[in-house]
Image 1 (cartoon, rainbow, N blue to C red):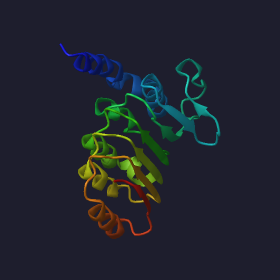
Image 2: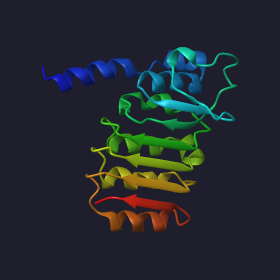
Image 3: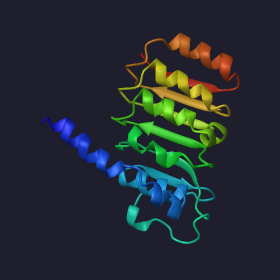
Length: 180
């Protein structure tokens, strides 16, 4: 068995979706637990501090802590866990940087989540080598997206096509590209 396959298999066990847990603790708490287990950070609405330690997740009323921002830099998030994000209603910013398991299907899945389609304002995708034009184009479903930064994405080949697609679908979007 290859080391990469074995590594990915272990990580997929860590990120499996526990729908009972989501029901019991609510979508924001369950998503926070999943994201932190995968090495990402979350910031809650009304707070400046990033939450990065799973063992120090805040306690209290389930509806008190709503995820406003996600920084998945160097995390192992992958599509198998994205169902955790289904019920999130207040996420305004997502940063995907050096996420080795993020690929087009992940971005397509994210962009199909109705709550995120309404709430997402900013997104950054940096050094995610498995992302191509197809995944980036899917982000046009985030109808309130104001800022999109794309950098070091070798799988993205048709920059002009992307620029045109976003000009048409999201005319007020500030699109920043740092692509070869």
